Image 1 (cartoon, rainbow, N blue to C red):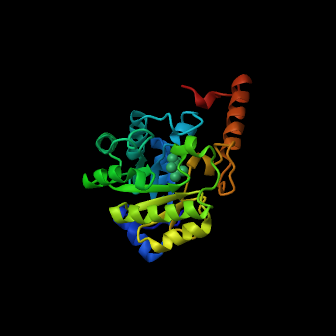
Image 2: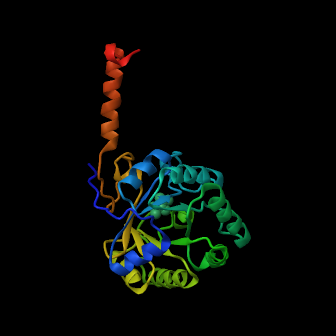
Length: 273
Ligand code: KIV
């Protein structure tokens, strides 16, 4: 029996997300990087699946999101799309594929859409990447913005601490949020910023604002799946709620399997031909 509360089986689109905001219905978003997990979370009723460049950390074991390539993101997004029926699938544009040159940015976004069949892209940054976002939007590709802690800029920040605590940075974030809405982004992710600021952004914008470490006053929440399922044990920020302890479950299951193999308990008579 399914325990989720989602009865609406219609495909989630960018315009349906805006309607959800208008109705005051919260948006639930999670990351996924492969077919099997995408299928599980789609069947559980998740609204948006983000093929995050956090794949660089949780799938490839890198310390930052910077090394993941466009080809690797397309591979992950292609697998996720095959497992997804209802959720909107958004694919992160990886570091170095959109920051420098808007023509290159458009070529990267087109590759993602054509080769993976993802339904939108996400890009980190505000006014600095305006030209790239506008060019991609002009091609009919929906863009989700991402402000606050933007992990692709870790080498500039030097830390993953809370962003926009100071007035100047908060003002810039607010201006960038309005700019992203004005130029046509369909939604905005706010990562690790004060809850009051996030709530203000969500109340001033008509597009959905989805938070991670940005408090409850926004229009939806996103978490990295490996963190919320307790697969990734080494990451415990204040904002993270763990819904399962899969690392313990997997460790115990694998331990039992090893014991069964070593003691010749597995396979038994009914488990062979
Ligand atoms: O890559 C990612 O998983 C993300 C989320 C943390 C929003 O960008």
